[in-house]
Amino acid sequence: MKLTTSKVLASKIEKLVADKHLNRNSTVFDWLMQVSRGSQRIRPVNVQGRGNYRTTSDRTREITSALIGLGIEFRLTNDAPQGGKTGALITITTKVKQV
Image (tube, rainbow, N blue to C red; front, side, top):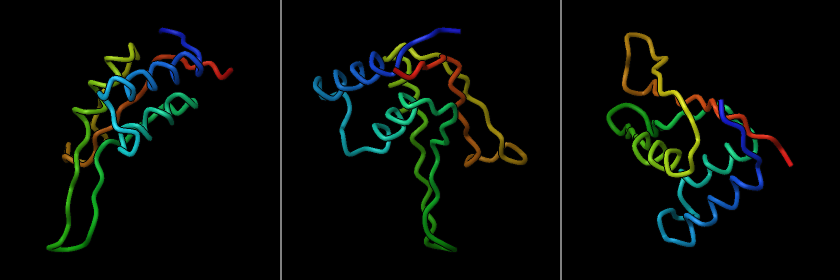
């Protein structure tokens, strides 16, 4: 298990924004900031709407590539019944120490 501090992680995220690899207004940026504050779980699939007008947005690829770029260890699992596509769960195994 790796250990990092919230300051180091926040500076790495800001570097990704400065290099234009990440948009500050994206949900991926929000999830990465939650990780820097100590969040251990990310659910990268969002379902919006009802009935025939339902939209599923899957950001698993974007968030996992950003986590790999930041050097954060994680585990990708699926906790949906019968392995549904909206049950993606990313569990952060790197310990983030709050400074």
